Image (cartoon, rainbow, N blue to C red):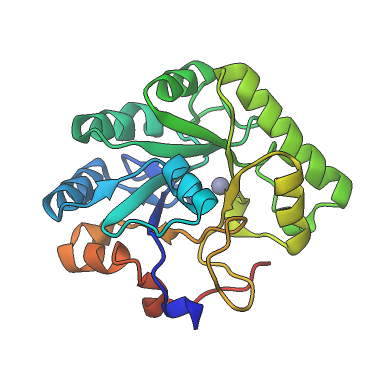
Length: 236
Ligand SMILES: [Zn+2]
């Protein structure tokens, strides 16, 4: 039933920029810019993920016509391509990085991430090594969540509030571990526990593609009712 309820749309991007011969979901700079333009034209407010969390804390209704923008993995293009476009529109965003990948070929460096953080882009954790969470032992789970949080905080000098489960995979144990590690919320993909209510330890996100530069597709995705248009997957 709750599947039909309003869910503040959280958009999930991976790489924004040129298409490459790999499996990274990519949206071109042109399509991304067009999507931001459409959000502005339809008078959507782009909120920081923290605002959504504080809304949940206060038990307030989520504001309509709002949207949150997130990026997984922390590709170099998040800094070089997406950020300048976000800046032009004055839109905040969150980027989830795995410290084990930061600075590797194709990924943003710590300097670039610190620069984003100073400009209002929240940097969150994507585990230490981009690990598929349901396969981790209880001990590794704690390590991946706690260590990544501590490393990112020491490198960028800000508190890390959110976690994004790699590939969206999670379990009830992982949700409890995220809370115990000091996060305030965690994001998944189109995965959900049975019941599919709004869950701050598994906030569902909407995968964005090149084709979402079409106004009707974008409007469906930011309507707050996109779960009606898609199938939800099991959490693991
Ligand atoms: Zn990822």
